[in-house]
Length: 247
Image 1 (cartoon, one colour):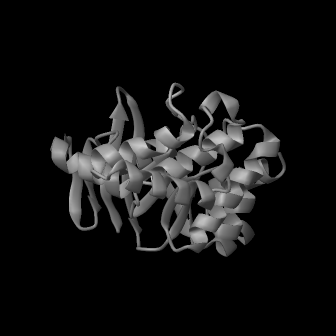
Image 2 (cartoon, rainbow, N blue to C red; image 1 turned 90 degrees about the horizontal axis):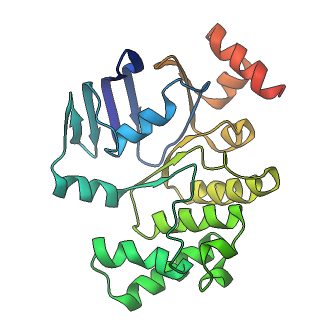
């Protein structure tokens, strides 16, 4: 579904991504982990066109998303954003709209659904993330965990082929993290293709098909959870695991 070939990205003198090669198959759940500044978020932002790499090629479903400094045309980019859902660290909900209106906006504008069809879809996915009773509330009336579940439901309302998660629990209080991870775990069980940037190693070990460990803009390990957690092949991976598991 997704392939990256020799992808590089610089910000001035800082090399955020350095020769990344990565493929993700349909239905795979890939967790990307690594220390801060290792390029994890930049990588997934490049996949959905929020960032344009300076080198290499990214393909989604066989079509080039970006090629060495040039991105898709606006129409193609809109289609990509329909096919690729993304959940950020911050919830990015419209505060002046109800939960239901936050969820129906995209399907009505981008997919041209009727209000009735968009509402039916929104209620379906609010039920999926276990907060159907919050439909008429505003974001400020919800907890952080509930807001992030609304954000997940909003992405699902576009019925994407791929879901990207950029540290979706990092802005949450500890007691709210598990409710979001549980929803993500249930989503994985449906067969959704997922790329998840996270430091939640318990989730990674339980849900991921593959672990991609990054450091200094490079993929240091691309392996199974069992292999990564029991015998990481790189000294940097072993050091990272020791620090995060003993934190």
